[in-house]
Length: 353
Image (cartoon, rainbow, N blue to C red; front, side, top):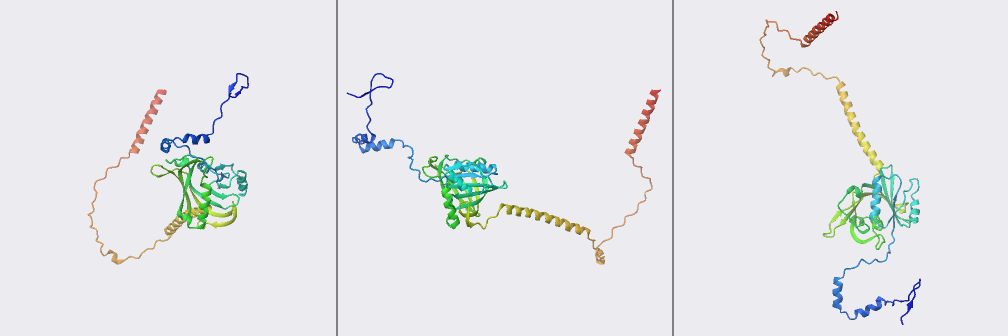
């Protein structure tokens, strides 16, 4: 007799459901009578399921934030980087009075082991810190030629949260400081595999190329049909200043000899414009002095009149008739105006009597 169970609110007894067998137990019995050819045909027609999520092992987390005093372009650049890097975290702006070592504590509170920090100075100069918190190394860059996604409006597009490919210039393997920066950039910009917020697709590529002693960043979409590249954005240029052994400080491992500070660059531009102005003033002063100098009178050269031919003498004509006087139109108008005024005065006197 089958087992019965009662409902909570009372009622007729209901037959209990028989326990299902496990799929593992039912599998071998079901497949026993099926041939291998039929299984292959079924596998051909079957739609593949979603990509299996593996285990998330690489626990890289990036903290992206800035100091106070940044402009709108820097803020949009930060938002673009956060959107392209699903393993990033945000934080409030840091006060400029605080020391940079405080960032290591912020990274520890946010459970982040990498950091991208934008530092603004004089509301016109932007610096970027790439750091491995808390042990280092760290690198400081001057950010130039910033163009954001909203500003460029490129035709490229990619899935949000997808994992990128990283393409590096061959010059990164030639010098040791570039090799160190390459490893730092790989750990920061590469999205960890099986990250919860990432998508299991690779449809764009980050390129880091070296030109004019600077690192040029570009983001391209990979088109599936012909593997062509279409730029997405953003784009910026990193001018290396120093590489430090620690995180946001410590002994200097490398200093760029080709680096020129923005203050020095502006000073050189001002001195060039001032030099042009001084040259113009000197030319004007020389011209004034030349005008004041007395002109040198050259002695008469007797041989200068050798080839001069005397002009023909014209006969003198005597005018016997008096020329007609010229008519002065202004004087005539004045006389006519006086006459008319006198006539009006006489008419007014006659009417008054």
